Each structure stands twice: as structure tokens, then as C-alpha cells.
Length: 560
Image 1 (tube, rainbow, N blue to C red):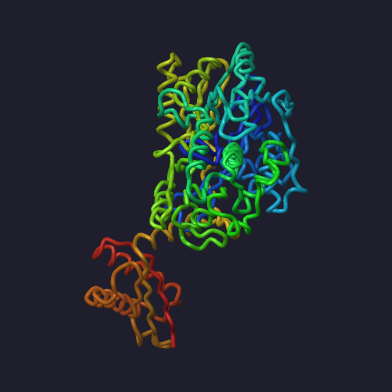
Image 2 (image 1 turned 90 degrees about the vertical axis):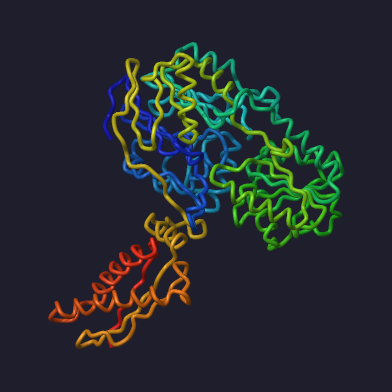
């Protein structure tokens, strides 16, 4: 890593651009690096067997000695979820700064990986100033869908960068803590070199509704429901927990939290003072069956259709503590993350089929986004009035639309940067330009083992899902190399064996001719591995030509 001259700053997104999730951003001044956020995202439906998607941090590992700190903006999984995977690669020596709630949530994950005693977690508050090497970081409180959310004013030799984090301009937040516009304005008066801004809801005009309308919806649902109320949301949605607790108390219900993460986070938030649970309201999950249906509210995970989460297990009929029945009211207090839509609606359809009444955002305001709409994004852009504009936290269309807004508001095209993962954007007060690219992308993780899934394995899984597989076995004489058995075929997901006699006969001829030709050309029998490769390639060309399919082909050559 080169040392930059004074007055130069580089910004490198390793996640969070062109996608929703796995936010990880790197700032580089002189010979030092600062990381903002360290998140994950969840797989789409084409990522068979993948549980988590993490940022590729190879470049950071190579330059770990230069990293001053990781600063977390808030406690959502797409901003903290990769810490337990990334920190060990950095030697666990990089300090992590974050708000109290974000660190509390992170501790649960780090504890599961037995890393708590190996990492350094340092809490910051709204009035703190963090001196991190050449970086001076000032938190700016913002409103979001989780308490303790912050933007960051990052002061460097090159100037101030305002990293917004996730935000909205909620004028009546559940916790009463407003976006600190006065502090943002004071910082803006000093001059802002660049804004790195959330763009998630740039497509939606106007202003996002207040989080409080969700509490009003919960009141209505809980007061009118004839039986159990089951509320599905992210385990980190502490505001939603509070509203569910408040409404349940008002209408004489007890509250049970299902699932380890939901129960852990509820306990942690209560212990830290972010959640108020009156005496006698909380009940154990194992006691749900002993409670009358109209006297219980259940909090669970699974609002994104995750196969192993609570709501999905209920829909599948294999949840240990809850069996869905007529009279249950189920609330999805979230919106599907892009890529999760079909999984969510599959779960919803199953729940309806079981007789439940399912309520989601299209039917009632049981969810409000934590991300500001276009007018809020424009307002923060106007307040900060930066020299350069860098949209992040959005898919490509969101970044492009935010850039269009900036240009419409007077920023020059050459001062607005829509980046790709791994782009190295260099800024100073005279110009900004992309000067390099570093290794970047995604690391796919099997959640059960914690091991990386190689992209070639994923590709094979995609081929299997799309075109199936074909297995061929041949038996050769060990001395002469002549074919004495087979070829025998077994197919799954490629074509139906009972109606493919003609195709398989032609495939057998292809294999026989290949073996005959090789036998004539070779003085001694070839190794089985070499023959297997030749057979696989010959069958691949034949089947693709005849059927248009490209199955995974497995070959076995035995000599007897």
C-alpha cells in the first residue's frame, strides 16, 4: 500500500455499492486506513446452500498493519454481521468502536465464535470525538429503525467526509432522539469535502412516515386479534420490540421471544436500558402452550423467509413450541430485502393455507422503512453542501438515481461518483478520480460449518439445479484396455431415463467410439483419470448439441 501525500484521501468500497448489504468502506490517508462498518448480506435464491455473504477482505488482510480501527455506525446485521469473520483475519488486533447497542449486538455474535476475550470493543456516544491515528471521527446522531444510530464526520488532512450511515428524518422517533441537524449544520459550515450517503429509498418521493405509526398499527392488531399475535421482525429491531411490549401490556397480553437471537437481544437491550419490559409481561417460550391464545404476543425471527428461522419453521409445521392454528394473527413487521421476495411470499402463502390471518405492509402500516425518501436525501445533501458526492448503500439503480438528483441540484457530473466494488477513488480539493482497483467481491459462507464455499462449488450447484447430472460408468480390461462393461448411465434432473432410450444409446456409441479410437492410438492403457476427462468432454458436447442442456457429468472408469 502506497503512502499518500498530504491533502489526498482515498475511498474504497468493499461492500455496499451495487447491492443492499455487506457494508464495508475503507478510508485511506497518508499511510493509514480506517474501516467504517463490517456487515454481511443474505444469499439470493441462486446461492444454493449458502447462508451468509461476506465482503472480500483480502486487500485489508495484506495491509492490516495500517488499519487504525473499525468504526460501526449502528447495530444492524448488514453493518456488524461480518465482524466475527473479518476480525480473526486481521489478527483480532484492530479495535472496534461502536454505539453501546451495536456493540451489545456484536458481542452476541462474537461470543458464539469465542472471540469476545480476543477483540477490543470500545463504546462511543454522541458527544465523543475519536482520535484514530490521522483520522478524527465525530459521531452525529441520526434517526433510523434501530436506536443508537450515527453518521460520522471523518476529519482528515484532505478535509471532512460526512459518512451518513443509514438515516431518515423522523420528527417523532420512538425513543425521542432526533437526527442531530444542528450538529450536522455546524460541521457543514467548516466545509465538507465529500458526502458518502445512504441511497436505499431514493426511488420513493417525499418523506418516510414516522416509526410511531407502526406502534399505532400494533395497538390495533393486538386489541382486535381473537387469538395469538405473532410478530416477525429482525432480532435487532429494538423499537419494534418496545412497541409490541407496550401494546401487549395495554391489552393484557404477555410477551414471549422465540429463537436464540430474539431472546438474547431482548435481554441485552433491556439490560442496557434500550428496552423497557414491565414486571410480569415477559414469559418463557416453553410456557406458550399454557397461556390462553388471546393473552399472548409472540416475537419471532423469519420475516425474510429464512428457512431455519422461527416463522418459516411455523409455516412448515416443524416448530417445537408453536403450531399455527386458525385464529392466529401473524404480522410481518419488515419489507423483503431485494432477492428475498419469493421466499417471503412462500412463507406467507403457507401461513394463509394453515388458517392464519397474515398482515404485512401492503395491508396495514406494520412496517416503516429506516431509510429516508428522496426529499430527505436531498435535504441532507443540501445541508452538508459537499464538494463531492458519493452514493452508497444501494443497488446500481439507486446509486444512479441519487447521482441524477445531485446533478439536478447543481453538482457537476465530474464531482459525482457512482462506484463499483473495489474502486479506489482519490480525492483532493482540486479533483476526484478513480485511480485503481483492488481485489473485491463476495465470500460465500456455509452457516453451519462457518467454512467458505468456493465459487466453483456454487457454480456446480447452479448447474445441478438447472440441468441436473449424468453419471456414466465403464469397465475396461486391465491389460488390453478393451471395453468389457457399460457404458451404464444414471441421470437425475437432466432427462427422464425411461423415455431417453434413443438418446442414451447414442451417448453409449459416443463413449464406445472414443474408447476405440484411444485404444488404437495408445500403446499402453491410459490412466483412468485421463480417460474420465475425455469421456466427460465428449458427452458434454454431445448432450449440449442434442438437448441444449449442460448437466454436471460424473464419470467412473474401472479396470478389471
